[in-house]
Length: 376
Ligand SMILES: C[S@@+](CC[C@H](N)C(=O)[O-])C[C@H]1O[C@@H](n2cnc3c(N)ncnc32)[C@H](O)[C@@H]1O
Ligand code: SF4
Image (cartoon, rainbow, N blue to C red; front, side, top):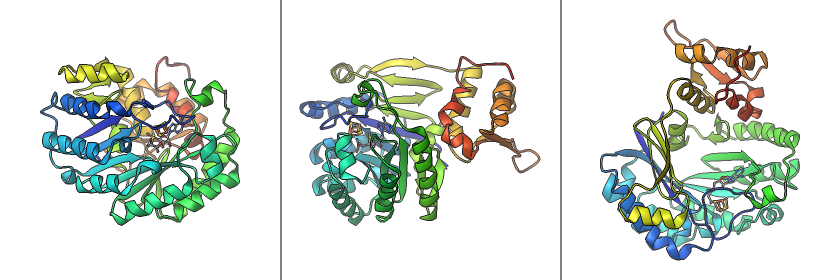
C-alpha cells in the first residue's frame, strides 16, 4: 500500500469540452500552455521540503501539451523533486487523439511508467454522442504505440451514457479486454449541472447502469483484474498507488490550476481560474483558494468514507465506532455494509461495503458527512 507523499499536477487544457465533463479543463487556451508550465514550476519551488514517491499528472488532458512542453514540465519536476524513473509510480493521463509517437517518446524518455487513456466507450456512435474527438481505431493505434514503449496502461470507460445499451456496454468490455489492459477505471456517468448533459437534463437509467456494472465486475474479474476500489480494477501489482493514497489519507502535494492537496493535516484547493492561477504562481505566491482542517467527528467521517471506497474496507477505530454507532447500525441493517472481525485478538474490526452497498456507494458515504442523522 502507498505511503509517503503523492505529487499531483493538474494540466487544465482540452481541445473541446466533452458533453459530460465538469473537470477544471479549458478549450481554446493552448496559447497559455508555455506560461502554464512556468507557473506550475514556480509553484513547485514553494515546496522545497516535499519528497514525493508517486506522481500523477492529470487534467484536463496533459497530452494537450506538446512533446517539448511535456519534456520541460517533467524535467522541471525532476529537478525539484528527484528523477521520475525513481518514483514508485508515475502516471500521465492522455486522450487518444493526443497520444502521438512524439509525445509518447517524450514521456518515456522522461521516465514516466504508466499512462491512463480516456476511451469512455468503444462505440463510434456513442463517442460522437458524448462529444469525444477520437474514434475507437485512433484509440487502438495509440494503445499499441504505448504498449510498444513499455508503459503500464489504464483505460477509463464510462457506463450509463445516453443511448448506451447493455449490448454496447458488453461490447466496450470485449473490445478493451482484448487489448490486455493492466488497469481499468469504470465510471458511471454523473450528470453535472454545468455540463451540456446537465443543461439537457440527461438522466441515467440506474437499473441498466447496475445491470451493466454487475456484468462488468464479473467479466473483468474473469479476465484476471481484481476489483479493488468502487470504480477500479487491476492486474495483481498494478493497482494505482497514487490514487490509493487519496483513499487512505496519505499526504499529497497538488500543483496547478484547480489542483487540491493535503499537507500537514490541511486540505487545500488552488485557484480554479486559469489567468489568476498563472499570475499568482508566477508572482511566487501560493495560489490557494480554499483551505480546510477537519477535526473530531468530521475528520473521522471523512477517513471512513474515503477508505470505504476500497473493497478491503476500513479498520474501525474505537473513536469511529463511538462517533458513528447509529449510522453503522443503520447501514448494517439495510445490508449496505458489513462489520467483520479483524482476524486477530488485537486487530480492529473492519467495515466494508457489501455487494449491495457497492451499487449505491454514494448513499452509504453520505452517512459519514455532516449533517448527521443520529437516531438509530
Ligand atoms: C481527466 S479525464 C481523462 C483524460 C482525458 N482528459 C480524456 O478524457 O481522455 C478523467 C476521466 O474521468 C471520467 N469522467 C469525467 N467526467 C465524468 C462524469 N461526469 N461522469 C463519470 N465519469 C467522468 C472519464 O472517464 C475521464 O476519462
Ligand atoms: S473528459 Fe477528458 S477530454 Fe473530455 S473534457 Fe474532460 S478532461 Fe477534457
